[in-house]
Image (cartoon, rainbow, N blue to C red; front, top):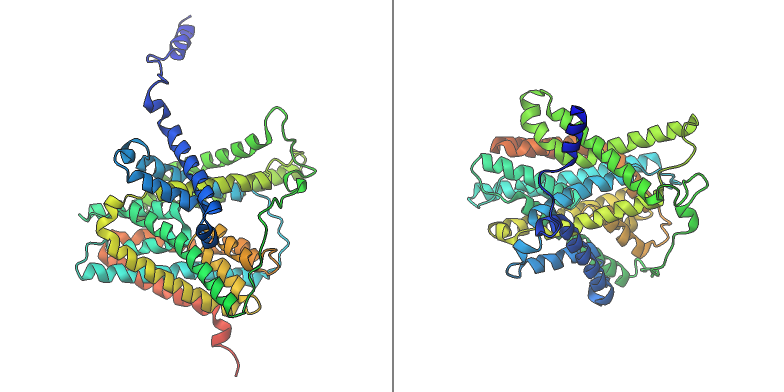
Length: 476
C-alpha cells in the first residue's frame, strides 16, 4: 500500500507546467528563428545574382540576417538569445560529426594511400601556419600595449580551419583563462567572428581566383544544373530497413545519432570525475567538453563497427544506418551550426577587438592562400587548381565550401580532389589532436603562449618538410 502511494504521489507533479508562458516556448522559438533565417538566406542566394555568384553559403547569409535583426532595439533580448545560439552551435557540431561517423563509406578511391596521408598532413600543417600567423600577430599586439589577449591568435585555425563549432569551444575556454588573469576578452565572439569571416574569405577569394584563371584561359568553369542527382538506389539498398514499419526509417537514424551522442556525454562526464594530475585538471579537463566532435566521431565509428559485426554473425539482418539520411542529418546540423554560430556574435563585446580581428583574419587569409597554392602545385601536379580550390574552401570554411568551389571546375568529380578531401579526414584528425592539446595549454600564461608558438613553428616545419620532401631531396 505504501509503495503504491509513493508511486501515485511521484506521478503527480506539485506544480503544473503552464504552456501559456514564454518560457515554455523559448528554446523552440530559437530553432524557429534559425529555420526562418536559413530559409531567408536561401531565398537571398537564389534571387540576388551577386550573392549567387559569390558562392557564399545560404546558412551564412541566414546568420547575417539574424545579426541584422539583433541590431534592432529590443530584438537582441527578446528574439535572438545569444546563450541559446551558442549552445545550439556547440551541439550541432557534435551531432553532425556523429552522423558522418555512422555512415558506411564505400568510396571507390581514385587517390593513392600516400596522397591521402599527404593531404591529411597538408590539412594539419595549414592549421599550424594559421596558428603561427595568428599567434605572432596577437603576441606583438599585446606586447605593444593593444588590448587583446595574447593567445587569441590561436583562434584563427579554429575559426578558419575548423569552423564555428570549434571556434566557439576554444573561444569560451580562452575567455575563462583570460578572466583568471584579469584580462577582459570576448573569446567566443572573437572566434565566431573569425569563422564567419573565413566563410567569406573562402567563397569570395575562391570566386575571384576562379575568374582570374578563366580570363587567363587556364581553366573553363563548367556549368552544372542544380537538379536532383540522387536516385532511389542512393536512398534504399537491398538490406536497408523499410521506410516505415513500427518506426520510421528517419527516426532510426536520428535515434542512432542521439544514442552515440549520449555515449559521448557519459564518457566525458566519467573522465571529469577522474584524478588526472595537475596537467589533466588544468589543461585537459577544461577542453574535454570542447572535443565533443572528436569523441562523437570515435564512438560513431565504434557503434558502426559493432553493428557491422552483428550483421556478419547474423545477429542483425538489416542495414540500419542509411548513408543518404545520415548525410541529410549531418547537412542539417552543419547548416544550423553556421546560422546559430553567426547569430551568436555580439558586436558590442567585439568593439574593442576590431583592429586585432582585421589583422589576424587578413594575415590568415594571405598565409593560407600562399601555402595551399604552393603545396597544391607540388602534391597535385596534374590537378593543382582543383586540389587548391577544394582545400582552400575547406580550410577557410568547411568541407562543403571546398566541394562547392571544386564543382565549379570539376562538376563530375573526375579528378581525385574530391576523394582526397573525404579520405584525408582520419590522418588529419590523428595529426591535429596533439595540436589541439597544445592550443589548450597556451592561454594559461604568456610564457606558455611563447612556448606554444615555438612548438607549433617546429611542428609546421616538420610537416611541411614531409610534404615538400621530394622537392628538397630531388636528385640533380
